[in-house]
Image (cartoon, rainbow, N blue to C red; front, side, top):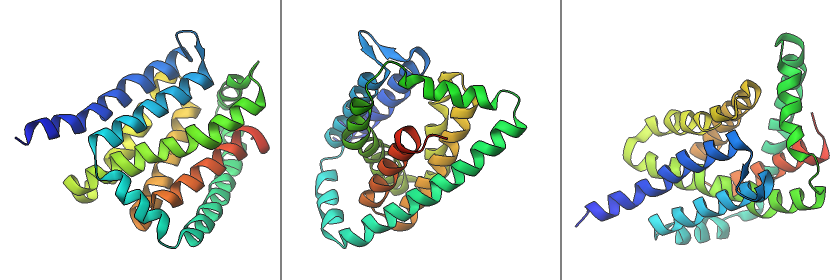
Amino acid sequence: MKRPGRLRTFVPVVLALTLFPYLLHFRRLGPLDFWWAMGLVVAVLVVSAFAADPGYLALLREDFRTRPLRKAALGVLSAAALFGIFYLGGILVRRFLPTGGEGIGAVYALKAGVPTFRIGLLLLFVIGPGEELFWRGYLQRTWQKKLGDAALPLAVAVYTAVHVASGNPVLVLAAAVCGLFWGVLYRRSGSVLLVVVSHTLWDLAVFLLFPL
């Protein structure tokens, strides 16, 4: 009787290992450009996570009810700290990596021809929150219950690995740093709200407000 439940928990992981690399490699999904496709992929993963874990919604409600202002404030501060890390990292990457500037430029090239307003809305309401709902709130939390301390490095490794398909070493390095940062933040706080605020604000800052 437990086997279907166990199988169900693997479905979101399989989807992530399939959809993310495909999107990052081809930079589109059928007729959808990168940003529409990213929003769709993240939405699919979030829906699959809630379907796989019926108790997840109740956990989120409790998280959002318990000291939400404090968690949101810490999310803002952590987003600022991570932006500072990336600001310094951008300088070092351009200086010491031969193709560092090209790698950073390739990331921002994804915005070409796409209305800034649309990118902002997708980052604010779908991509930023959805990634944390899936990667930390579902995947890392699920593995923490089963694997204990091994869950964090495993979750960081998987989050980093799906970005390898982009063929951009700078993006892979950025994913590793972000995965570790938000993974540790979630491991210590246990709050999805906190990492959602952190990730969403960092996305908006890096991609739109203060490009590196």
